[in-house]
Length: 181
Image 1 (tube, rainbow, N blue to C red):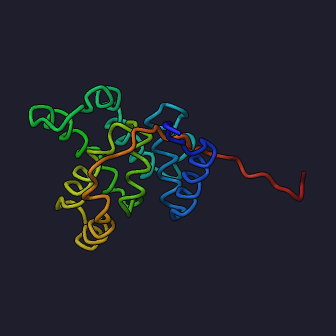
Image 2 (image 1 turned 120 degrees about the horizontal axis):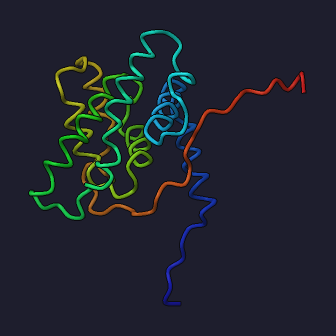
């Protein structure tokens, strides 16, 4: 028995769905909205804006997310210092925006979103980007505290990361009136 057994893809997808279901509804909504913007799935303004403030936030997010294709190409293969700044600075800027919206209130929600926006190869860089963005002064001190306390020791000190791409990408689902059906 020299081969390793891989977990069933269905089990991993189910675990991702379960993780997403554990997020607060505002976080779920923000993740779906962000994926619509970042993966160019839907017109996010039409789908998600409830008022002019939210529409402005979506426009600002879309402007920042225009850099995602280049960012995906720039993910460093190693931890060489020469590759860090061109990649990490824009990643922290995106993270600062998303954390500043107040809907991603834990590292796990942040990681869930960014694994899907950028890909599995971003995992080693997420703890540093999250901590840097979560410590920025534009965030309310209580939010900074909550964010920084949400990253586990295991996430902050991991010696290796899975390269398995996420399988579950949540999206908007219309509610069905069961009584009318």
